[in-house]
Length: 109
Image (cartoon, rainbow, N blue to C red; front, top):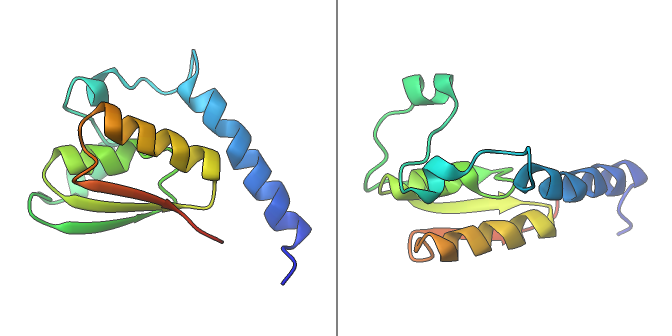
């Protein structure tokens, strides 16, 4: 099956955003790298404790939120359709020692 042009364009957009989001002026990953990642304010307010839970995180991009949940004790599977994003997510999981708690995988839209 041929992928529609709109899907290819969307994927290319997100593939390119990875470099921007992890580059200078992108996302601040210092809290994540320090072992206490933070979610957005509304997510922090609404999400119950995840320790011991199994979480599927769809559209995880480069995995910052997935890895934050893993830091809090969840077993997380992060899914995204951007291969470069998943590559960065896996590198971050390795850097943070979370490969046993977070599996990031690339799949079709």
